[in-house]
Length: 194
Image (tube, rainbow, N blue to C red):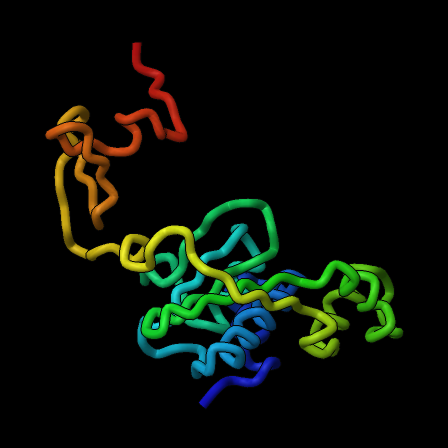
């Protein structure tokens, strides 16, 4: 049985040690994804894959509402710095991208007249605003095949340059060699070794 908004927000607040507007948005986004995709959330299996476009509070809200987590390999972070997420039904391959409507921040004032400031208006208002006035839903098609995003758990190779283990089919083939992304120039870091 799906959990109610207040139950999910209580779980999120316990996880995060407070409740903020982005957590509320994340929970609402996750709940709406379940309705749009006709999935019972939070899920007990791994049918839903979520691709978050930011980390932080909003991602925690989505995780609590959907039971998609990085550690369960049901959530990916593609950090575009946007409060947005794409929800993918891995059985049907149907994908929807959900974002807050820009006007929602200002609209929240109308839904929380008791609020002391804009932050509190968002915290309260985001809980009260109807889905269609708070969130935008777009049907999307993934540019990368779903099978490649999910990959095959447990597959391992060693990079033939640095020797580090590469898991879940994330290696890059360079000629006859298997290399890690760092060794083919896609590293997010440089080493400090002399």
